[in-house]
Image (cartoon, rainbow, N blue to C red; front, side, top):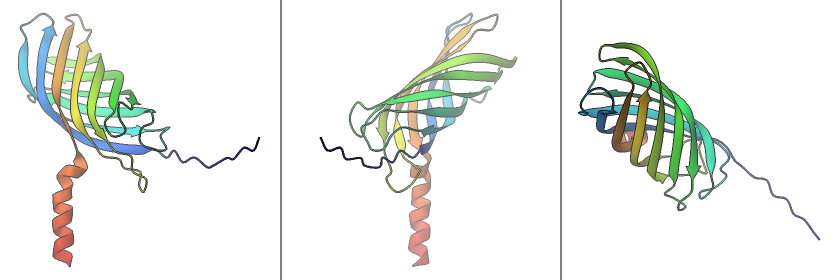
Length: 172
């Protein structure tokens, strides 16, 4: 048997996205369900991929607010599952801390399901990511609450790209 080895390149791929959508606060909690506008940001780095269509693991960090009444900062681990080559499902879980809405910093746990496009960039460390997500956020303080967030995540590069193109056009 003749065995041939080929080098495998599995450089990390980072992504930065802005999130917007609806936050349903106190889905399970002491008060009535409070629908609010959600806005936030999310950054991640995925390892163990050398091409599209492969699984990947890596850390993420996020920051979010519901109608600017509180601030949630979190981090954890995410797992990319290649449903198709360009449209994976990404599952993530981690911890966060919430401040605001009459509370001091309180710890919680969060879980997210992302469905959308996640590119693999063969020429750079940055891979674009845009899609829909659903997230659960549980704060187990004395009056435990569960929030559900539904929204869209747009890659930050999509928002900067028109300015970059205009700048390049003006320089020529």
